[in-house]
Length: 217
Length: 229
Image (cartoon, rainbow over all chains, first blue to last red; front, top):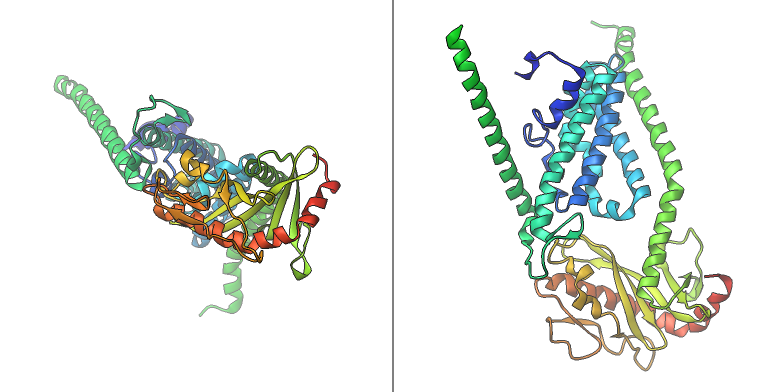
């Protein structure tokens, strides 16, 4: 559907942010989405780590796309992705042990984030390095945006703060359920509801614009 | 039927891709490991230093010890296992404030690692910090944040029995608000398992370490000479 539009480099970047948002539209990578979005900082760190891996693995996969035979492509992609995940694991440890502690096992689990393998297979292996980079960056930032949407809501309701800054008066009783896994599902469900509603409204508007034109022509 | 020669010709691109990518990836990981290794080690040392000073109020310098032959303490070397080290803290005058001891045990979800400060002069635990835990957010993780719970470890009685081989009273967690004796830990409502886990970890670790430390205070006292604050 989206491919009918003329393809431009800005579109490679923009589509991941909104129209093909990995979380809200493609519903990919649910494991980190639900597990580490219990605070804004965790969500941001996870989003940026995933973006880093996504951009670099997209670039390398695209660079090697004529070198990798299709029989072993999945194994090679996983190897490349795992390498960048290990790299990002060390980098986070070097930047902040606290963030590394908070993200825990989920950094290593970026390897199995289907979003990254999905982009390698569906986009990077078929397009030039430049476009693969833009696609990775767009998808990564879209993923980060979605994680922040969840992390923000869950931290505000579950801990009464945002990025560690207290928001409410002392009397506020946090909804602990929001920082537990079930809160992740609730929040994700509500965001998906909102997004699908926005999409339906937009579609309706488009149909409404289209109908009179068809009648006149 | 294919000849072996044909087979190897067909599989050559596969080997080339897998081995080639493997080597590039290996090289990349090794370079990043070498580059970040010293920074990570420095971060870990800084985090430990901060934790030691946190659990030993008044300490400004530290010296790590480990158990040598016949359970006698000797200054730790860099390659000694960290779980077998204790960290003596000294004040500005160079006298021993206390000993920070790492301990770990099973919590509600996963292993909890803590560091606690032992003051041998008063035979008290004077501080405790959770280094790593994956307890339930909002409930079990109160062992790290809850001020009433943390206050348990400002002066927790761990005096040794007459023979100096074990604690006089076992450290026990009691229901929130029902602490009567100085060796009891006021538990957290809603985090019973996590607070009991902390009590058990401290109990096991102090039964093991405190008699050794108390018997060899002279060695630990003398440690202050070799370091500067």
